[in-house]
Length: 170
Picture (tube, rainbow, N blue to C red):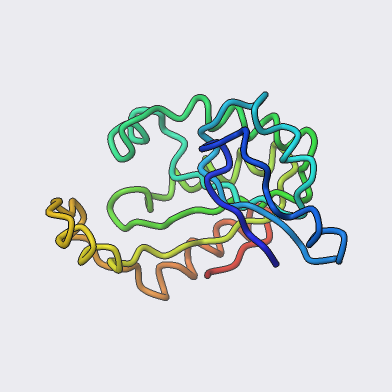
């Protein structure tokens, strides 16, 4: 498997997966979906899988936690589902106290279900990047947050499964 991130970062870049794909190596991306659709559409059509991050549905909460709205991200997810529904897996970074509330998670499930996207992966929050922030002289804003418990993750997974979505914890 080859994964290439930053899908919209450099849309003119030629991704080096053509030869790998011809050899049968699955090729995909993990993306936040914040890119110009016209710049990446041709790339998307070549992918075997797309891990598509949805941090939350609520636009204001999304703006608070990421610094930007999520209209473009959700618009691109709708477009993606029209042409690559079965190759798209929604990735949900689970951050306790930030985006782990039932209402928000149900919103993510509802969007996935309505678009025909059947797969979800839960990405439990971890603080592995905290030290890097300190090394860079930056303040790590989530020092107070702890990883979700296995029980909490299994409850969240059960909620997605109850909505008839395939879900796994990674």
